[in-house]
Length: 124
Image (cartoon, rainbow, N blue to C red; front, side, top):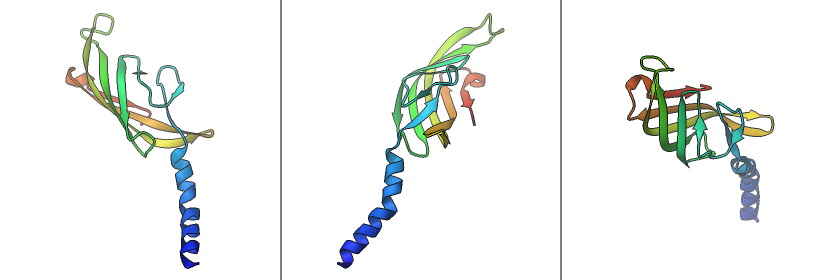
């Protein structure tokens, strides 16, 4: 009897957190403003991220890796060129947007491009 009572109380304590963990989590695309789950691509005005693979999706932070195509504005953006590299993204700051959980902050580091173009930050 006592074990049944303890099991029932434990279920009541953990069920809300389990239900929340099962809810889908989204990220907003910076260019289109559309919500996506585990997007394969994320686009900014001057950076295109492709081939994204995600780990830890849904927790307080999501981490992804992929390829980056960065516009290097040298001597200016119109006369610039594109350089390719690899990216590591970290999504954080989950918030409720209506009835959906959404990562609000996108931060990334791009390797293989000039240092001044190696950091990504949006919504942080």
